[in-house]
Image 1 (tube, rainbow, N blue to C red):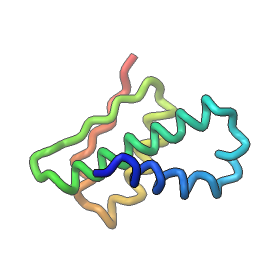
Image 2: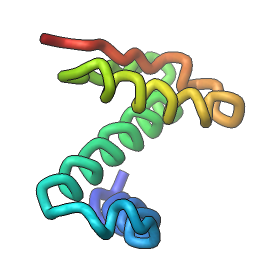
Image 3: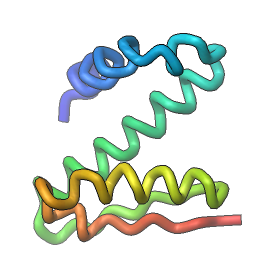
Image 4: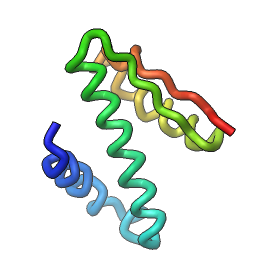
Length: 89
């Protein structure tokens, strides 16, 4: 996947969200990187049959949000069943 295209795609979505625009730069960067991680996991699970992406989260809230995000596209993208979200300490 082309990194520039992915960045443009994610930012074109985020810049229209008031919550995102109101955040400070560090928070915006965290949200952007999280979106990028999710999108790359979805892309890899679709493109490669034998790849089972794992996303590591540092806290339970992040794990819940990421699980919800991936679950919301599961009906349209069944290969997302291969994605695992783990909580690390």
